[in-house]
Image (cartoon, rainbow, N blue to C red; front, side, top):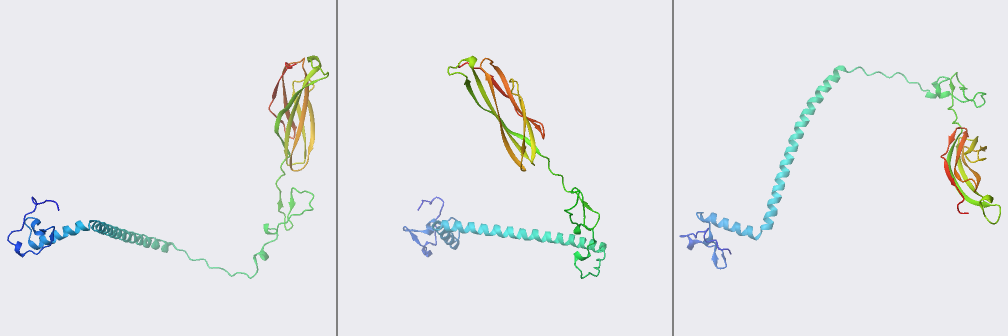
Length: 272
């Protein structure tokens, strides 16, 4: 037990009457706080021993009590706020109810209803009785069977074509004799284009445009079905005695005019 003789004063005059507990051969009365009555001193010393032996339990109990007190305070505050809010809402509602009751109009009375279904009382020529005449000679404007109303169907989408792809496929050397030389050789360039169509059938007119002599040409084909695609090829030969820069382009002439990118060719036969 720590030496605390400097802060504690033995109780004189009553030591013979004290029947305290003995710990390690020392009476608790010898370490009683100075100036306290005997009964109060006994209770304080016992409380100190209890707190020292059960400090964890005492701490948890105090924390629990603090939480309970805080929760009770919050609950009381919430109920007080709710009561104030209900009092305010009740007052506003009563005022609003008085205002609406003064402006209230009579509820319209419902007339006698007929036993006949709604379809039976629909007049002839209304939208509920409109029909299409499939045998009409003018499909754009078909008269209704029960009246003079006409229904115009939406116009059909026009036939359209577009260039989906355009590229150079290959290039190869061609010679007229087994031993290659420039006067007897040339290079063949192969180009391809892919055309996509929609809202067919229809006819597509196309063309090839180039600065190569004899490479310009036009053509056409028929596209069947509502949509599809067509692959087209073009091959040109440039002799080895005509080196230079050339180009090739693919165009669609109808149903609309569309141009592809231009492919450049650097032609030479330096390998021979």
